[in-house]
Length: 193
Image 1 (cartoon, rainbow, N blue to C red):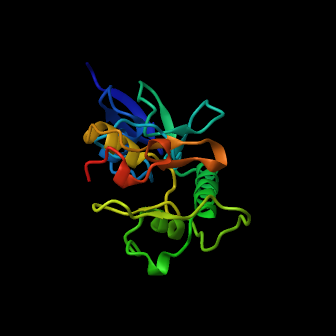
Image 2 (image 1 turned 90 degrees about the horizontal axis):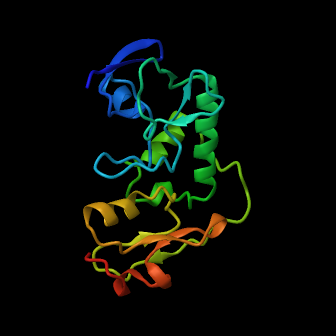
């Protein structure tokens, strides 16, 4: 199959026909931020941080799942995209435990880096947060629910790379969490550690 020609931020790019907009941008050296994206698992477009503007579309698209096609015109950092991205990050932070200074990932955290890049230094949204607790029952790792942003990357890695299906999304809306089935702790799940 022949490559397709697209435009990203006014730059003409030749992309492979089975690529997504995100893959085409990465190949061209154009950075589009992501949180839920991981190259070795299927894409879900869950976090929406990779949203970009598609010429002729009223809605922003998730670049990690949107396939390239001939003639696409994409903007990755338009005012509309930046405003939406900042709002999405602020919503993620609103339910985060914000203990960055004492977190072992301090200085090596994608969410923290995005907050710095988009000028987010406080929690704008006050109110009730999802339950914040730790599951340290496993010998292999600790699941800190207060730091989970529900991107689903861990669920997909467990399902697709480990072929175990030990964790899943449970509940809906505000009460949604990622945990083993039936509310079990990790030590009582099929987790292989």
